[in-house]
Amino acid sequence: MDFSIRAATVEDCKDIARMIMELAEYEDINAYVKVTPKDLEQDGFCKNPFFHAIIAEVPEQHKSKEGHTKIGYALYSYSYCSWLGRDIYMEDLYVMPEFRGKGIGKALMSKVAQLCVAAGCKQLNFSVLDKNYSAVDFYQRQGCVNITTTIGYHCMRCEGEELQNLAQH
Picture: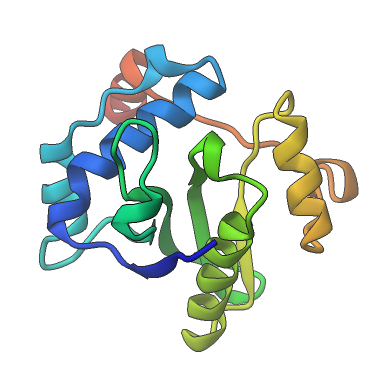
Protein backbone atom coordinates (compact mmCIF):
# COMPACT_ATOMS: atom_id res chain seq x y z
CA MET A 1 0.00 0.00 0.00
CA ASP A 2 1.22 3.48 -0.88
CA PHE A 3 1.53 5.73 2.19
CA SER A 4 3.84 8.38 3.61
CA ILE A 5 4.97 9.38 7.10
CA ARG A 6 5.53 13.05 7.83
CA ALA A 7 5.72 15.51 10.72
CA ALA A 8 2.32 16.76 11.81
CA THR A 9 1.35 20.37 11.22
CA VAL A 10 -1.21 22.56 12.93
CA GLU A 11 -3.59 21.76 10.05
CA ASP A 12 -3.59 18.10 11.16
CA CYS A 13 -5.05 18.79 14.63
CA LYS A 14 -8.66 17.99 13.65
CA ASP A 15 -7.57 14.64 12.21
CA ILE A 16 -5.35 13.89 15.21
CA ALA A 17 -8.28 14.65 17.55
CA ARG A 18 -10.51 12.37 15.43
CA MET A 19 -7.99 9.54 15.62
CA ILE A 20 -7.45 10.06 19.37
CA MET A 21 -11.18 9.50 19.80
CA GLU A 22 -11.12 6.47 17.49
CA LEU A 23 -8.31 4.95 19.56
CA ALA A 24 -10.18 5.67 22.79
CA GLU A 25 -13.34 4.09 21.37
CA TYR A 26 -11.35 1.05 20.23
CA GLU A 27 -9.98 0.68 23.78
CA ASP A 28 -13.42 1.46 25.25
CA ILE A 29 -12.10 4.43 27.23
CA ASN A 30 -13.53 7.32 25.17
CA ALA A 31 -15.18 8.88 28.26
CA TYR A 32 -11.68 9.91 29.36
CA VAL A 33 -10.89 11.98 26.25
CA LYS A 34 -11.15 15.71 26.96
CA VAL A 35 -8.59 17.13 24.51
CA THR A 36 -9.90 19.24 21.61
CA PRO A 37 -8.34 20.21 18.28
CA LYS A 38 -7.79 23.67 19.79
CA ASP A 39 -5.89 22.11 22.73
CA LEU A 40 -3.72 20.21 20.28
CA GLU A 41 -3.02 23.39 18.30
CA GLN A 42 -2.03 25.31 21.44
CA ASP A 43 -0.04 22.51 23.08
CA GLY A 44 1.76 21.01 20.10
CA PHE A 45 2.46 24.01 17.91
CA CYS A 46 3.65 26.65 20.37
CA LYS A 47 7.15 27.96 21.14
CA ASN A 48 7.84 25.11 23.60
CA PRO A 49 5.55 22.27 22.48
CA PHE A 50 4.29 19.76 25.01
CA PHE A 51 4.15 17.06 22.32
CA HIS A 52 5.22 16.22 18.79
CA ALA A 53 3.37 14.09 16.27
CA ILE A 54 3.84 12.32 12.99
CA ILE A 55 1.10 11.45 10.52
CA ALA A 56 0.58 8.46 8.23
CA GLU A 57 -1.15 9.57 5.06
CA VAL A 58 -2.40 7.78 1.97
CA PRO A 59 -3.05 9.23 -1.49
CA GLU A 60 -6.59 10.31 -2.31
CA GLN A 61 -7.25 7.10 -4.30
CA HIS A 62 -6.64 5.02 -1.14
CA LYS A 63 -8.67 7.17 1.26
CA SER A 64 -10.73 5.51 4.00
CA LYS A 65 -14.42 4.59 3.65
CA GLU A 66 -15.21 7.88 5.43
CA GLY A 67 -12.97 9.85 3.04
CA HIS A 68 -9.92 10.35 5.26
CA THR A 69 -6.39 10.40 3.86
CA LYS A 70 -4.77 10.89 7.28
CA ILE A 71 -5.07 7.33 8.57
CA GLY A 72 -2.60 7.01 11.43
CA TYR A 73 -0.45 8.94 13.84
CA ALA A 74 2.09 8.72 16.62
CA LEU A 75 2.17 11.31 19.39
CA TYR A 76 5.33 11.58 21.51
CA SER A 77 7.32 13.86 23.79
CA TYR A 78 10.93 14.10 24.88
CA SER A 79 11.59 13.27 28.51
CA TYR A 80 14.44 12.32 30.78
CA CYS A 81 15.41 9.17 32.62
CA SER A 82 17.49 9.68 35.76
CA TRP A 83 19.30 6.40 35.02
CA LEU A 84 20.06 6.74 31.32
CA GLY A 85 19.43 10.32 30.26
CA ARG A 86 17.34 11.40 27.30
CA ASP A 87 14.35 9.38 26.20
CA ILE A 88 11.07 9.64 24.32
CA TYR A 89 7.64 8.81 25.68
CA MET A 90 5.24 7.71 22.94
CA GLU A 91 1.75 8.58 24.13
CA ASP A 92 -0.13 7.11 21.16
CA LEU A 93 0.46 4.92 18.14
CA TYR A 94 -2.67 4.44 16.06
CA VAL A 95 -3.65 3.20 12.62
CA MET A 96 -7.28 3.14 11.48
CA PRO A 97 -8.58 -0.47 11.50
CA GLU A 98 -9.04 -0.76 7.73
CA PHE A 99 -5.36 0.12 7.21
CA ARG A 100 -3.84 -2.24 9.78
CA GLY A 101 -1.58 -5.09 8.72
CA LYS A 102 -0.02 -3.07 5.90
CA GLY A 103 3.18 -1.96 7.67
CA ILE A 104 1.89 1.51 8.59
CA GLY A 105 2.07 1.02 12.37
CA LYS A 106 5.58 -0.38 12.07
CA ALA A 107 6.60 2.56 9.87
CA LEU A 108 5.20 5.04 12.41
CA MET A 109 6.97 3.34 15.30
CA SER A 110 10.18 3.06 13.29
CA LYS A 111 10.06 6.81 12.59
CA VAL A 112 9.64 7.57 16.31
CA ALA A 113 12.59 5.25 16.99
CA GLN A 114 14.66 7.09 14.35
CA LEU A 115 13.82 10.43 15.99
CA CYS A 116 14.74 8.91 19.35
CA VAL A 117 18.15 7.73 18.15
CA ALA A 118 18.82 10.98 16.25
CA ALA A 119 18.19 12.99 19.45
CA GLY A 120 20.63 10.84 21.42
CA CYS A 121 17.87 9.20 23.43
CA LYS A 122 18.57 5.88 25.13
CA GLN A 123 15.04 4.47 25.30
CA LEU A 124 11.54 4.68 23.89
CA ASN A 125 8.84 4.30 26.54
CA PHE A 126 5.09 3.86 26.16
CA SER A 127 2.08 2.25 27.78
CA VAL A 128 -0.35 -0.21 26.28
CA LEU A 129 -3.74 -1.25 27.57
CA ASP A 130 -3.46 -4.80 28.94
CA LYS A 131 -6.55 -6.02 27.10
CA ASN A 132 -5.29 -4.70 23.75
CA TYR A 133 -3.71 -8.07 22.93
CA SER A 134 -3.00 -7.28 19.29
CA ALA A 135 -1.04 -4.14 20.28
CA VAL A 136 0.90 -6.04 22.97
CA ASP A 137 1.79 -8.71 20.38
CA PHE A 138 2.76 -6.02 17.83
CA TYR A 139 5.09 -4.28 20.31
CA GLN A 140 6.69 -7.55 21.38
CA ARG A 141 7.36 -8.40 17.72
CA GLN A 142 9.25 -5.08 17.50
CA GLY A 143 11.52 -6.21 20.35
CA CYS A 144 9.80 -4.23 23.11
CA VAL A 145 9.57 -5.60 26.65
CA ASN A 146 6.96 -5.27 29.36
CA ILE A 147 8.82 -3.58 32.22
CA THR A 148 5.94 -4.30 34.59
CA THR A 149 6.90 -7.96 34.42
CA THR A 150 10.68 -7.58 33.91
CA ILE A 151 11.43 -4.78 36.42
CA GLY A 152 8.18 -4.48 38.36
CA TYR A 153 7.32 -0.86 37.58
CA HIS A 154 3.71 0.21 37.36
CA CYS A 155 2.42 3.30 35.58
CA MET A 156 0.90 5.60 38.22
CA ARG A 157 -1.24 8.72 37.85
CA CYS A 158 -2.51 11.62 39.95
CA GLU A 159 -5.27 13.76 38.43
CA GLY A 160 -8.37 15.80 39.11
CA GLU A 161 -9.22 16.64 42.69
CA GLU A 162 -6.34 14.52 44.02
CA LEU A 163 -3.88 16.49 41.89
CA GLN A 164 -5.35 19.77 43.12
CA ASN A 165 -5.13 18.56 46.73
CA LEU A 166 -1.53 17.42 46.27
CA ALA A 167 -0.60 20.80 44.79
CA GLN A 168 -1.94 22.53 47.93
CA HIS A 169 0.56 20.83 50.28
